[in-house]
Image (tube, rainbow, N blue to C red; front, side, top):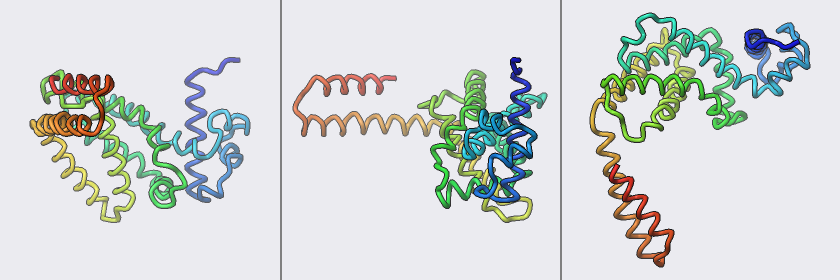
Length: 245
């Protein structure tokens, strides 16, 4: 019998919730997949079909939180009237609110990523797809509405915001201030900087400067130390084309 997507999603959510509970109680090393499966009410073969190892469970948890966040944002009736800064701050605030319930679990993930390095940061980056999709849509709408001009390297902006998000989570994990007031202030001040950059022509000027330096100094160095070749001519043409964009 074919299992529906809804049923699969429900089973996956049960496994993730079971893993959060057991890993929080026993620690990542001591909680086994078999125990997690039993706690979730699923068979051992079933849990291995969804998550072949405990590391995949960690990534599954993060992806699951992104999916829940997307649903929450869609339920905000007037979300489309928010400014880009308000939308981005709401995104971050929603993620942190979801993490708050599982703070001890998230602290374990952060420790494995930033302290013990038993989980690679690159692997965490593989969970970014849904988050990137949300930010990309926010940027698209704000550009089309004329709220901001299309920034240089537009395609990389969602990824840069993901990096910022990782920094915020790392800060939040270490924050022991009352009601995480320091994290709130950190987000507010840093988002103010991001907003100012997006509404100014600084990024365009930096991009122009970078292309100038790349075009003049890199090419002159190549011409000085490399014999003229077809590849050098092609590179020069590409750089000249980029500077005209």
